[in-house]
Length: 582
Image (tube, rainbow, N blue to C red; front, top):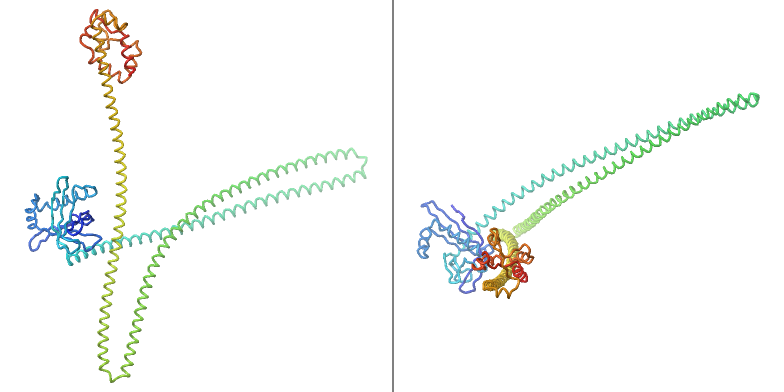
């Protein structure tokens, strides 16, 4: 049973005696091999390999007895069962520290020479500090011989083949999915084309029906109007003829009956007016018919607009159709590419077959020559037999050489595949490295920004400290001045005369006075300077200090006494005016 515990690419420092130390990336794998026959046994295997160099291989098999000797030699405090986990934890610490400029934990490989001739090497896990480099663990690894390298390469090839099989399966599945999608899209396209044809046919039939109906109605209405006009014209012509005939008769034969004819003429005029009114009515009907014709034309224009909207919809559907055609064209191009690959393979096979046929023809020609020689030269049969034996030997040698060449070609093809895959892995790792570098740059910019913020805050702190010092100096000076003023007020009326209008004698304070309510001895209600000083932060601070520390007990007693001197509002105004200047 083989169990893989750790397999990662690690940055390692390689030291040789003959050359300078160098840093390189190596794949480190930790495995456990357990055997049940003849006795249960569990070995720890540590392997160092390089993905870019297949011949770089170092192995270590550590059993329980070997671990006991290692434990006694290096003074380890770990048992064999927990040793793999502790070893992996140390490796993880090395991996976490390898990105730093000065890592705390290092992996070091000590070899006897620069090339691959060295038989053994030691893998050291080192903890660095300013005083000393401490070696936590040192493992002796043996360089892999030809059989070990072949086994390792065979395992790598096996894993690569498995990955190739999985990828081929995925490719087949994806091809099947794409073919299904193509068929479904083609079916949908066919259905959409059918629907489009149906819509076009329906639109054409509807337009033809509408046009035929409107033309029939217009022709019928025109025929009716013409018939009515002809009828009225015939009636008018008949009436005119009758009137002319009657008037001629009356003029010739009945001139005496003029009055009657005039009456009859009036009747005729009335009839004429009636006929004119009828004509007017007919003209009104004609105008209504024309209006109806105009309405019909408007309906035709509306239908044409609907037709244009239908055309736009058809255009959009045609766009969708073109998109689908583009997709199908892309898929067809992919199919064509695959067919070209198949054609190339078939052409290669055909060229190989033609080469084989040429060889067979050359063989046949040689056989014919051999038959001619046998027929012509019977006396030299023994020599020919010997020559045939030599030819057979050469043919067998040729077959062996061809087989060897085929094997070499297969091996070179596999090696080229491996090299291509390794190149792809290298490109991926380079891309990851670029991403990591970009992240590092961003982190460094953030650190610079934070350092600038820190410098700004330190400058602000220093300024605030200087302000505090200046404020404390001002407060101390003001306290001195206040104490001197208090002492001068306590000494007597001489000092009062020196500072006029600053000290007054007043009546005793009431029970609800300012001092009993923890207020200053001078009022702030009528003094603007007091308000300005109290609003200022330094003034507020000084007043609080003054009320808490500056008043001496004697001054408090004199301020609260029945007839002692007390500071008036003018002194308060002077004091806070002084503060406002600061």
